[in-house]
Length: 548
Image 1 (tube, rainbow, N blue to C red):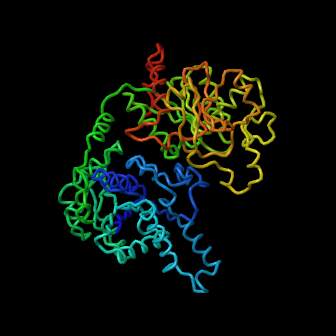
Image 2: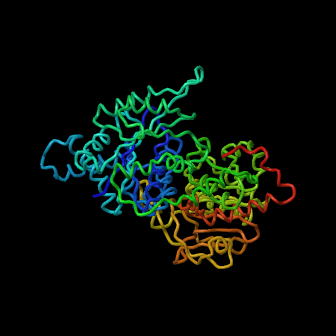
Image 3: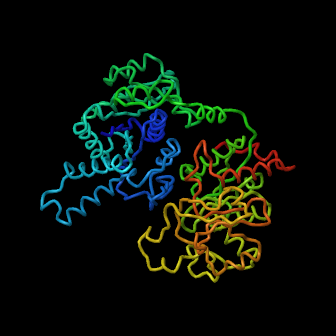
């Protein structure tokens, strides 16, 4: 029988449940346990695919095309396993499924209630994960904070899971925050006590408390938390904030959380954990390294979580190449107003990431032109490839009106357009190309040198494609389509032949980057950035960059 670790959060949101869940997965996987991680999101949206990035942050896409919460990115980066649609469940999905069954008459005219119908569907979704993955331990994170009204059905389902599965197969972890009162220099446990009391009032008694803090937690506070929250002292694990989230598994390992979980769940461990590669990665992250400056020109830069995977992919690649990448977050709309150009003047490289809608697009196009003319290494991701194409069409092919039909449906030169079979689909998401697709790599290209392979599989999330009616004109003027679908009909990678590194991918390589296995395109980009940084006149460009 599979076992379950359930994570809840208390005191405040954004306390670090996602990273904690990922770290627990890493602890168990290092011991030879097959794990999977699931996120239960209480919002009524069916998925985050249509949500504003300012509200929700990044949409993380899985191999099967599921649009999921950004925490699934943390999960995959820590445990290095691909997850599936079953690993992200929302209130919208639950109620949609139950109402659909009611409309079909599946409940034989019975009154549909939160208990048992909604909670039963939640439990069914939880149990699908071990059934489909064969995971021995499933780590389940409940989004939000204890006390949120929308979380109650999920918490009730978790209570029922212990009743049905038994104490030896279920374990509750509560992640809380210890606020620091600067006037007295004290950490306060009272909010944690109230949070646990709220949790216990609905029938959930935590077995483990993860006490997050910006300051060291003394032994007497650990004892106090244990006493007032009815948890044994060795079940309280303080985690002091660290600038490197990849250090969290090591912090928990030093406190023997992995061994504690194994003991409580009666797990049969297959091997002793080998933390040497992970420790080496964390140690390298702490070490002093030469700095390079990279401008990220985006639409949602005020909320950096909107580009979580991009930021982490840059971090992974920079680490393996022995440099520290400092990111300048450039609002593309500011470029349209004539400001923020000083940031681009001192950059060693530029990334234009994905996005939807026409706001800030002209700023991105201008940034791409700046990178082309100044020979600045450029990596375009999805929309970043499309603006590269638009800029090239306007200023190299002299097609002044060139655009995407997403931004100008009546453009005279739709170099980016919907495929003919997409035009009659009206539902949002219906025209999207989502998930893992193969890409054939052209020999002798930048992409081929980066991948060192003839074909790759990459994750997509886009609606519009390069218009093949313009392919010959682009190729005649120096653009190489170095990545294509196996049938040659879709452009996957575009690059310039007269530029050290100016490349855009229609897919999102950032979703497959891992701390100990950075994505090849990001590695190739960082190498080009380093070359530019070493060019006379550019080596001091990062001196005043803001740290990412």
